[in-house]
Length: 454
Image (cartoon, rainbow, N blue to C red):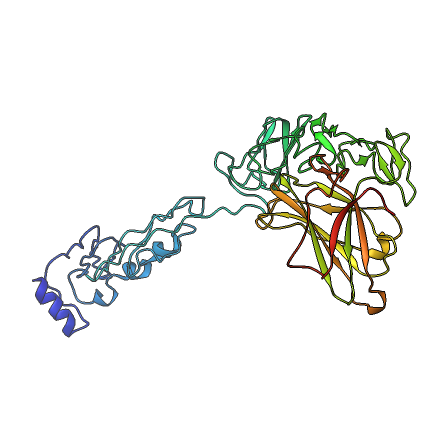
């Protein structure tokens, strides 16, 4: 019979009375028979069903389901939970979608989906609504949420105080270390430990606190501050200051105060400008005198280097050879005098099997004014210069580029010494280990021992 009714409904918009009280709709749908109005009242419902025939008697089909149509879908939109973004129960005709999450929008909660709706005329049920997305809680500017801390309670620039230290400094989970430190603070996302006396945070690693002992030779009184080996037989750091034991004829006249660059035992008491037995009585010698054992006097025992220059840009090389020495960060001093010279220069440098030092050049005119201490700085060890294996000092004597000043020259050498005393060549009896180069040479050049300057 359902087929004949459905077919008849398609042919005509009018209903025939078939003598049956009314057919109940499926799933909660119902038909009320009202003899006075012939009006069917549809009940908004769930799944598909038929609310088909309103009752016996002619008439009321046109008004059948008035209530169902009038209220269809009301709940789907009106009662949708706040925050649910989907059309729950799309296509439903009667109160579809009721029951969406009422508290949608709270952190980590989802809006619930609506149930499928129904078509009171037997249509297909609408699809159930999908759940709403979880709400996201946004922190105030500068604040964030770290594991173990309350939501939005951490400022990474200041961290989170935890007794004597600070957690989450600069990044979640980063705790400031307290090694050799009393406490720590977080300043602009950087750990700043309050170090115990004699220690410092030289590495700037947030987790290791104050890892550096400030009583070491490489970190004496401050990070990276090293003690100079200059003139020292033994150099050490005590009470955050460099306290060297000076080599013979050296003195520490400028005591280290733990600040600035340390100069070691900076005073050579046999120097031409500070000749004496102590810092208190050192004096300068006259230009033609040298200092030996703290006393100014005539130079004795010399190496005389003779260059018969006759043209511009001539070069003669001499080399002092010795056993391998570690002269890292030290200085070598050559004491020279070139009486009567008017032009040209001499360049000095130290070297070994691997590389050589930076050269030092001085004019022969300057050397003609009196005895002069010329310093060679050995410096740091590098890939290209092994300062632990110094075996020679070379002197390249040049005639110069001015033809008017070219003439034969003689350079007297009183000695070579290193600032730690390991090298101390004085030529007291002979020319020692000085040799004349056969490759870089001037015809007629020679070298010999001399008792004194003529």
